[in-house]
Image (cartoon, rainbow, N blue to C red; front, side):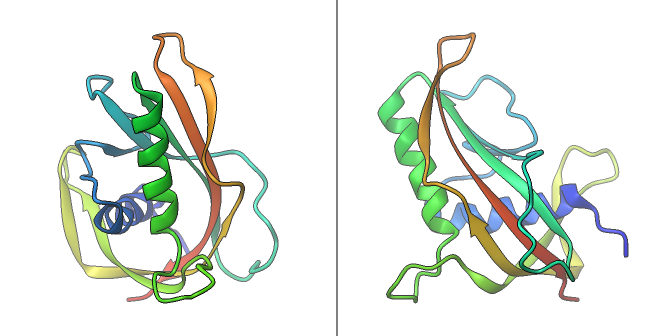
Length: 157
């Protein structure tokens, strides 16, 4: 089965944005940021190893990289996004599983995000690596904070 990884990542970004209190296209981006935001989180595919727990479903390794001039604000945003991947109803705060998220897709020009009225995604499980951590500064002097995770997904509809 063929999956559009960009559409799945867009859908995941929107699902992460609501509980973290940020906005896709303003603070949270997929693949790359426009470089003009004071603080920006970018959800991108990462070439890290994907654990084998659920090898019967597609998996992708993801990185959430936050950049900004204020290290504290960057770490705060990274933690809010990290926490959005945890089950809010679980007293042990385990990562979300069996999470149905609304499908999103790019328009025909590849510029606007629309609801995908025929597709929802099932996030079977998430494997989170370490919590967010500061990496240092990039070439533009912005602080970088990141965390990595693995997502096991399939089409729910």
